[in-house]
Image (cartoon, rainbow, N blue to C red; front, side, top):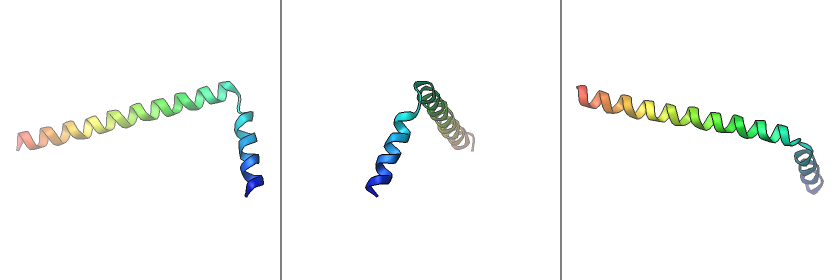
Amino acid sequence: MRLSQLKYHDDRSMLSARERFENAQKLKTLKVYLLVEVIAVVLIAYLATNLS
């Protein structure tokens, strides 16, 4: 277990700055999509309760 943790750490540190940046960008866009989806659901629920 100890050895696999060390290996994992080595693999992580070998990631280039570019790859880390790209991963951060992907995560950011994912969060934005999630936020938009939540807002859409809340808006639809709000409209549904007001129209009925």
